[in-house]
Image 1: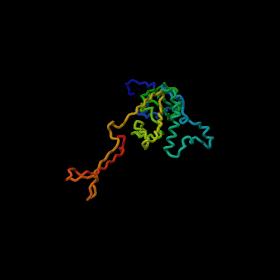
Image 2 (image 1 turned 90 degrees about the vertical axis):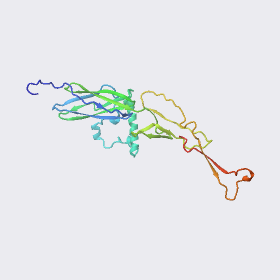
Image 3 (image 1 turned 60 degrees about the horizontal axis):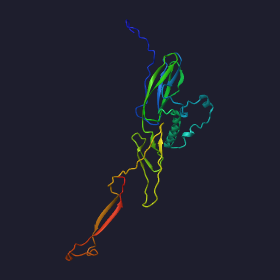
Image 4 (image 1 turned 180 degrees about the horizontal axis):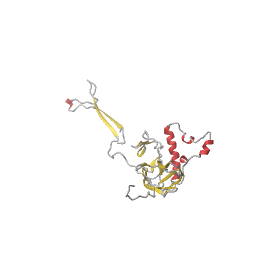
Length: 284
């Protein structure tokens, strides 16, 4: 400070930035933010990070830190095999999501709807060095969630930063592998169950009834009651068939069978063709 100005004491706590995972996070999808901690001194310090609320109950195998000593002595590994069942990118992505879904069930076993995990939670800040820490958010229920990331660094006062996330989506949905179910994609690229259509194919009149099995999936932590209502999408007075009438002209020089001339006091009858066909689109 300049001469004559009071000397200001350094702050007792470190101001950490808030970690916002977003206001439209997709349901049942992991989100990761990275926090960089830098040591601006020549003193080594130990640190410990923890979650105040909604702490993850376990570390999923896919996020576990491998043992460096074990990896050095291992020449061959089958770590890639669970995620490489399919050769295509779409198949591999599908397999990875199934593995993540099974892991997230254990992480979210507290049924809070959300869980936060710090990787790694402990470590050492070397002099003039930085450490990158991942904060992972798991969820299975829509809503707004807030928590705090607690930071304890050796030789400094404890500090914290806020964590917040807003999850959007519906935990109850139709299984995408239902036979005959056609799911359309929403604007975000995910499947929209609200725009699903169950196709029964082409059935002949008088044939046996067609059965379809619908699988409903509940990814949420609480029970859901599902009620089904079947209603006609078409109006009650909508056309079921299409009818067309056309008048056929008899060959030149011949009269229609049973025709009467104008001298007989009657008009000449006409040949009429009537065609009745099923409506091409019974969904309108």
